[in-house]
Length: 382
Image (cartoon, rainbow, N blue to C red; front, side, top):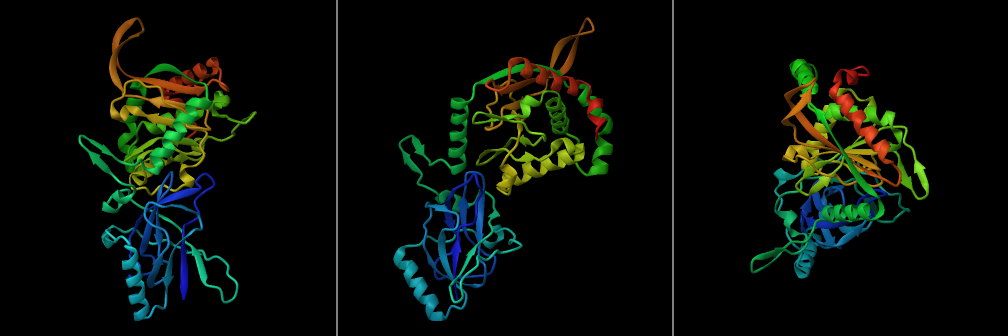
């Protein structure tokens, strides 16, 4: 029986993908759930698994092709006879198919279910396969586009993720009236609280008590006080969000991604820390789902982990504001009439001035600063 292998459903915000690599040749035997091909979208890399044991009879789309959801990529024969295998192999050689380069040890776990499209009686079975997220590494990753070297320059095609990030950044600059306001926060109270409870916290919850949980809770507290910062513009309407879905910017080998902590105000410190750690780990291997990268009402980015002392973060549309964290650096400050050394961090809030006035932006950032300098208040709602 012949089965058409189709590109998976992507999402409302992702219309197409790029066929990165075929893991199998036409004519090769495949096992159920074995990876056949990799597709890169604007947000993640997806694996296309085999729905059954059989032989890959033909491949209809080539590496580097742009494919749409539901588009036929290949045909699998589940009851292939030896002569069918030979015919498929000869056909593949005639068309010059590329070869698989990824060893079985690098393949990921199979999906749980395989949804089947309804078919009329007697029609060939056609399946839209669930996609698995895979690491963005290995030799097969290099086959997208053509790397050209000329003299002292090397030209490499941009990944779809990098292209999409570029488009969104330019769009944000062109459509929003972006301003940035700054403040600084004394991190000593947070440091002292972390030192007091870090051992007990890690023993109880199995994860370290970091800075991000304090910042997420401080942001949610400030958004309650200044709700317009949590709103967005849709045409001529203002969309007010009665929930706090906080995007956390994560750097990956493929570029920046922003997975979203849903209903962050309802999460405990431990849940926030575990959620962010999970996102960070899975983002490095391309295992964050499209749904987890979609939405968000406000974002936080931390350039301090790379040593940035001060920056002006850019908006993540359609959100109207983003908070930039920076390096904690000991500096002399005036405190109760005396000069003391304290661990200080500059905060930056970039915001869309079409929606948020300067007064509201400053009040929001002051609310974040106040929450962090009196972190005991953040524990009241835990």
